[in-house]
Image 1 (cartoon, rainbow, N blue to C red):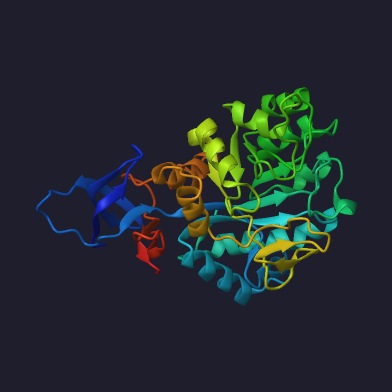
Image 2: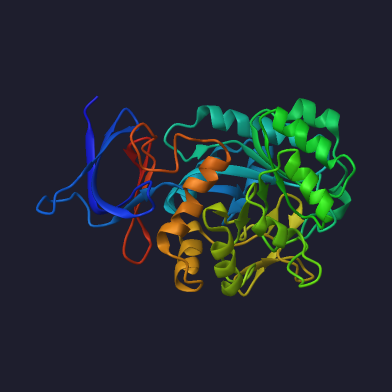
Length: 370
């Protein structure tokens, strides 16, 4: 196969800096990265960065992941893929929120089939189960569906589940965490108000992420540090964050990146705001924000480029650090070492950004799709 070359004066490389560089792309992968001389013409003036990786997508616009999966709706699935590509997202985790355990199998089997059949649509890394084994901070999740971990269910249902968010309060939480990890599922602590010991037990059993920092968890009280504080201080865990200016203030976004640097993960936690539902969670958009009838936040309407802009412009986080949180860190967290960075041997999943940080072009496995 003939090589394709993409070059720019601003290519984000693994040292976290932009360089004048040329990418040789062949057979869906980056074959080489070479220096472009000052007098050589580049193929684009846009910034070239790794394709974005979103670990928490409940839906977008009018397409709900739960409904699309339950109905095995290929048209809805294709629309989801196109909406993600518009955002520069090249890898993602369809996310299923809390529901009765008996309901998951049909939706999960549907997602598995889509994952196996994906070609140049955004690559499905695997399923993210956000519940139903959550803790006491259920947030927008329907409380009647939240339950203690069911170990027998976990043993038979975690194929292609790459991430599971669970609470830390249950007596079975640590055992469930260890079991999930033994089955190659990464565990995040979320929707939880644990004690320090419960948090430390989960980390000791392999939990590696805290889901949507500051939201649906105990926080930063000066005499009673909670899950948010421990997450920022514990080097063994990363922390995802919804950077839309509503879920978390710009000051705390700035503080989080300053405290945790390379351990931050940008997620959208986006929902099908126009459909008014995320699974069985009913919500509406009020002043641009998805909420339950009582005002509780219910996912977000933010896109990944908007989250990046917020971090840079409102929270004053350096652009390379923000981009790392949207690419390399989530990839590393899920041990997806073939993506999230621009280097020889990695998948040619690439996003081009203009000076306004809008998506200008997207390549998936070396094929330009935007």
